[in-house]
Length: 274
Image (spheres, rainbow, N blue to C red):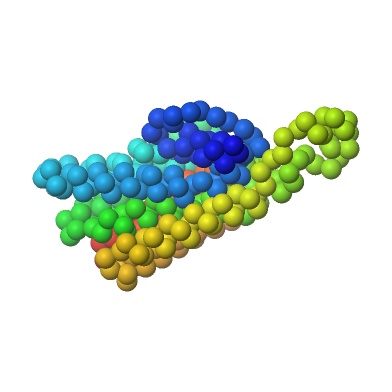
């Protein structure tokens, strides 16, 4: 039941497709992050499938390019683009750490966020249209969204969170802290449901990641090109998140979105050379 709840939480939070059943349990946040590879697989299959369908139906080239550039942002409800803009605004301000953290949580859209988004979208369109004109491997498209979310999910689970992050409450403990547990009565402690640990979320994520990447290589037409795309997405996501963590003093959902956008951009760029 916890696994199902975690998957539905992932779907409801990180995919704009209608979720069949809406569930939420704070005890399943680690599992929610653990299912990010599967949500990435769903989004990637839709992205690649629509590309094949548009080409089969002989849609105009520029229309195909626009839809392909639009889909990865739209299928996650533009959530990761929002994180990208927030982080860009904070990091590019070049202000002291406290000010950067404040800008990160500011609901207003700054000039640096807009400028970054414009150039990101232009670059995305340029690379995806070039890759589409040359032909893209179905598997390589799918794996981009799987890997970007997998690396971002691992970073959230393994890194020190910002104090303002929604993931700051994640704990290795199945229950509450020892001080709180001692204060509860025995009956209350027994009735309290166990929370999924970070370790469980990490193991769940890694199992899916190994399966999907292995299947990707198995289904690939050209192993070398698939390996290059794998590497570009992993490095792009990891490096951008590492840089953002250093600039902002910890990990958060916005930084995960920042890494996902950069990782997918690097993967799309690599498609041109594959």
